[in-house]
Image (spheres, rainbow, N blue to C red):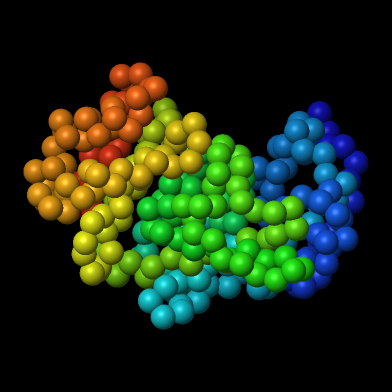
Length: 275
């Protein structure tokens, strides 16, 4: 099947992109690397009147430091992060995460902002950036606003992004000295995860953030288990305690799902040195 007819616009800068979206009056779709939107267009699951290509916007291709956080442009590709093309992200957890996304052909084109906007519950960035307490900057003709990653995704394939808004950038901690772990289960390399878990403890210490991904909707945090691990150390990260926390958090899931998520969380905790 081929896509339904649509107009294509490739704006030269962010201001022109915002104007294009405003003039489309809610009938436009933003295209980054087209790894998600492209198939949806061909299957006619998406039938926009206009497609606005933001993949070449210079404002969305930058990576820079601001204080103790890294600002990553929404059009930065997974491959660019994986390859360490941007100095602030060299050695950062995001570099390892990017290297495990799908296949190299997808990483060459797929963008950070595009993955977040698509909001597939099994996507790597959804769960890991929730754990990292990422902050998103959204822009439209009416101005800019910031939103936390934990508030951005509202349900499967549903976000707080308005029709005329663009994900300009994502802010993450620099991560030096922090403890980090991420593990996902896939039936074969390159497929979407059936279960995943991310762990992050900032350099200053305190309770870690434990997040389960690849669920039916938004990622799920486990604050009580995180507090227990902060108080009791690795003793609270035993197999029994982890499985108990998973069963309580996912009562509608079966024993197989409980086991998969428990293994992912245990291995993520081990990677972070918290188990």
